[in-house]
Image 1 (spheres, rainbow, N blue to C red):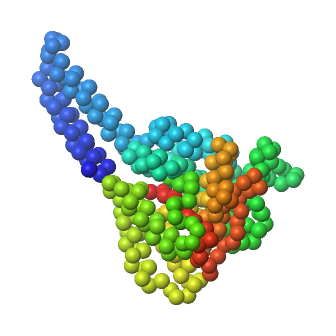
Image 2: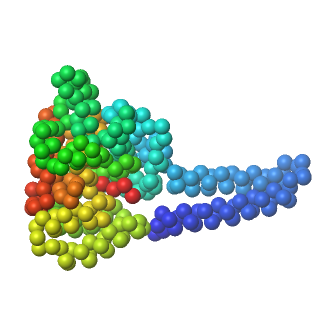
Image 3: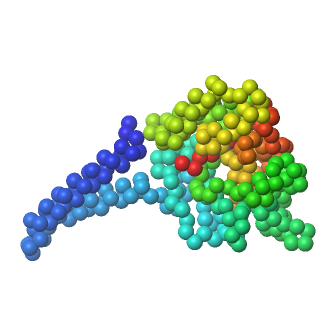
Length: 322
């Protein structure tokens, strides 16, 4: 089975051959007034246009095309960004995934999320800013309070105390499109420690996400790094957790704290469904992990941010931007 890159290369070469044939036939009949002489040209032109459209579909995916492939409720794009955060994008970034990848994402129960990192007035879309937009204050109720949709965070002050100040007030989601699992990875909870969860992610990449497809180089390198570093993890608990959170494979496949909250909030705002309503997940940030989840009308629970704890109290969701 050809990889997507090989398919594109083959189709591009076929398109060039068709173009050359079309030019040659055109040169033969360009001075003729007999429509019969033009029949071959018209046939080749129709074939070229069809081949071009097919190749373009592989190279560029519109938001509407993504909705057709994944289902409308599973694409949180520019409309949903504006509806949730009040941010109107002047330019929507291109979706970096192919038709094949989006079809696979649908099989795996993933959603496509457009993340932004700035509020409507240009400030970082931090956890503090998200909570203010959706919940607000007693004097200035936010969107969800006005619509009686509940809370974003179960205990905002507890969430804030549980991490570094900048992680709450300044750090924002990484902007761009991401494919995100709507549930925990199977077997990732309960009981698996961080190292075992990373092994599970690697297995998921190989056996599910990129099965019968060419794996991007970034993931190949990240897996190579993990295979080398897992043998030499620090014996110091705090240092080993820091090492795990900073691995390329963790950065490529796990949500940050800010992204987990962003994704859960967007999906709930659009569909009215609380994802991860009964499950906790680990999200990475600042060289550690935070236990988030159990999202309900009362908000997202944030148990702790930690650099010195790596036991199987939470699972992992899959998230990729490349």
